[in-house]
Length: 40
Image (tube, rainbow, N blue to C red; front, side, top):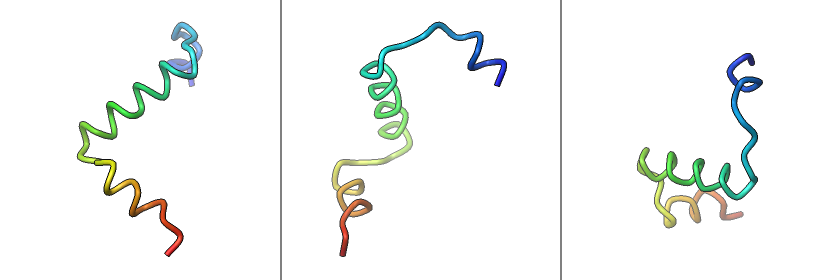
């Protein structure tokens, strides 16, 4: 929690870009994401 309070604020766009970069680095591809999000 302390780490979150001591970091400078970032825009939603920057936050989403960072999340996307980390997911990609961990092997998440657009195809895998689409499969995970499908309702089937």
